[in-house]
Image 1 (cartoon, rainbow, N blue to C red):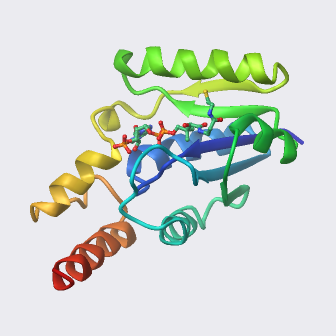
Image 2 (tube, rainbow, N blue to C red):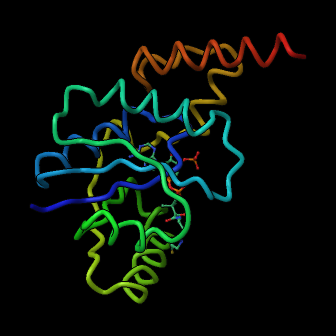
Length: 164
Ligand code: COA
C-alpha cells in the first residue's frame, strides 16, 4: 500500500490545495492531509477548525485522511508508514523553498520521497493569505475556496469583530 503525506498549514484549505489532494489521491492508495501544529505562522483558524474544514471538503475522496502533527515531518511520515511527501508547486517562486525543504527531508530520511504535483493553472496565484485578505475586506472568495470554507471565514471574521 503506497501512502503519501500532504503537509501544510491549510489556514484555510483552498481550491488549489484540493486540486493537489485530488491528483495525489489518484496516484497513491492513501493520502494523509496533515496540519503542521508547529508552523512558524500565526494561524487564523485553530487546528480543530482547519481539520473540520478539510474533512468536509475531501469527504468524497475515500482514500484521503485528515490529521495533524507536531515535530519533524519525516518522523511523522515514517510513523504513518508513508513512502512519499506531496508538495504542490505553483510557480517558479515556490521552487527554491521547496527544493531546500525536500533536500533537508531527504537528508533526514532518505526513504521518504518528496513528490511535487502541479495544481491546475487557474490556481497558481492562490494562497491562504490572499484568501483571508480578500475575505477580510469583504470580497467574494467563492472562486477560491469551497462554500463550506467561505462560510467559516465569514463566521470567524464576524466573531472576531464582535469581540472587538
Ligand atoms: N493552492 C493554494 N495555496 C497553496 C498551494 C496550493 N496548491 N500550495 C501551497 N499553497 C500556499 C499555502 O496556502 C501557504 O499560504 P500562506 O503562506 O498564505 O499560508 C503557502 O502556499 C505555503 O504554505 P504550506 O503549503 O501550507 O506550507 P508551509 O510552508 O506553511 O508548511 C511545512 C510547511 C509545514 C510542510 C513544513 O514547515 C514542515 O514540514 N514543518 C514541520 C517541521 C519540519 O519537519 N521541518 C523540516 C522541514 S525542512
